[in-house]
Image (cartoon, rainbow, N blue to C red):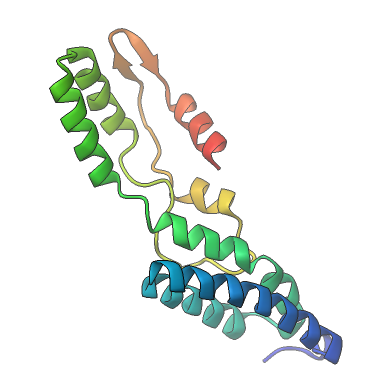
Length: 164
């Protein structure tokens, strides 16, 4: 259980209700527009983790950031790396430019998985998009060359920081 310091008063309840109302409306609009039951399930799992593992005195602050978590869950679920590579393959191969085909081969070595996971394990309503991207980005372990131009592991870290 939680200690007596974690008391939850009427003001805390009011703030939680206001923040949940805003996030609930946003979630309802997104589900109605896109019909994403997966998004709804993921948000429910995040909320269950929060309510089970956090003292009530912290809920208002966490709920204040819930809209950011909903945004993250929605857009990370849309990142389809396989489809992107398939489209780029078709475009590069039909262009007749061998340098583009070579460049795509290098990019495949660098960008091996989506920058943000679609799962919610370990994500809470106060999670930040930057942290989710940094923690999921696959590291680049060695230098990758494209026509003598190096791409260093530190370059990938810079890309991840920019995206985050």
